[in-house]
Length: 160
Ligand SMILES: [Fe+2]
Ligand SMILES: [Fe+2]
Image (cartoon, rainbow, N blue to C red; front, side, top):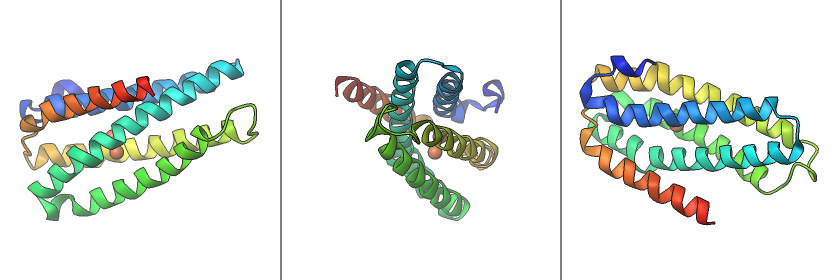
């Protein structure tokens, strides 16, 4: 999805979410290319953290806002998205609970997570976001809370 084509009412919030998608995809690419085990684990940890922050923002703010705006248009897509988040979070929890040294399935888990995420992100970008634009949902009032919550979550994740 091309940011420059997003109308102003949806631009800032969707751009923030698109940037997150891009960042996480880049981390998964780096993970696949990296040779050092320690560096791989660092990259996987960061990807899991960023994904958790992103999923939390969507679940706490973005998805409920869309559902409240138009339950008929968004309900089914959002339910699927929540199930997909649930599956991703289970894998994230497994990855976070172990280490690359102790778990010979570690790399496979990260690879499968990256595939889940690629699938989910594609659905958001090809179906959900175009629908948000098509239904002319004005996301501007959501921008401050999304930005602030993201900052807060990133801050507490770094501090942890
Ligand atoms: Fe999502
Ligand atoms: Fe997303």
